Image 1: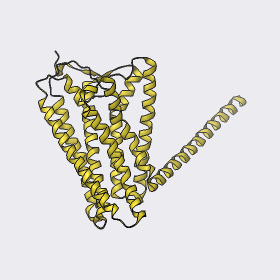
Image 2: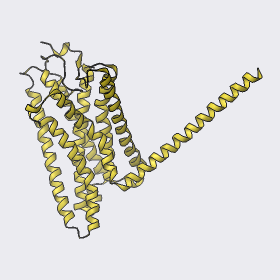
Image 3: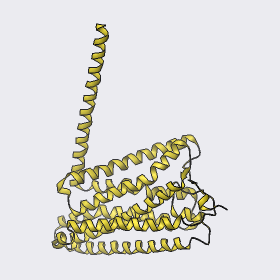
Image 4: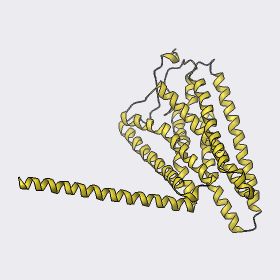
Length: 335
């Protein structure tokens, strides 16, 4: 029997027991993390630098890239550090921070995906009112509401979860601090308050899901009424990336939290957690850029410019090194 005040750290679930597999996991997750940083960073740079992309759709996409960067940076660096240094520990305050950031970023991302469904609905079903309904002020307010609701929801969950007395030790069956795993450690008669918060969160998530479904029902009806095949193809191409991202986000999240207890196991929970916490933030930028010619062209320009700058810097460094070597050689020869 232990109290939460006496716990100074938690022990996370390792990916492997042997040192070779731990290093392999570190290398694998490092590659995934760098790919996520590169993809989302390129989208941020392209949208911020190109004035043609200063539209509501790309403004929300920029916010989505920021949230994806935060999501993957909340869980993966700590897991990589644990694999590299062969440790399982995370401090009590670090665990609380991880829970807060994870809940905040993922709930804000879900709210933002709901807003992006509304953006596509207005763009296709009410194109004449698009500038009025989705002006710059309205977009900023909706984005602020998504971020603010995430902060509020995360504060309530974090305060509720870490105020519970702990009776089950400090070992978490997950590679990051997750609320269901923390509830397993709490005393059985004291976590009802947090359960009610989780149920309220699921109800809000269901409302957002219904809103997204209804938006796309209206979008599909409007697209099918378009006389031009080219217009239908263009409308569907602007909705397909968002629909793919929403499907990936919801399918992995729902399977992680709603899978039957009969098929639950530590190894399966580990794989599912990687799927819903690592895969969507990594794939989202590639999903959005693969069919978007404007975004793809801007990303190509950014990468070309970065490559040119890196080449010029390399040439300058080589010249400086060469001049330094010649000067030192001349001084030694004169001596």
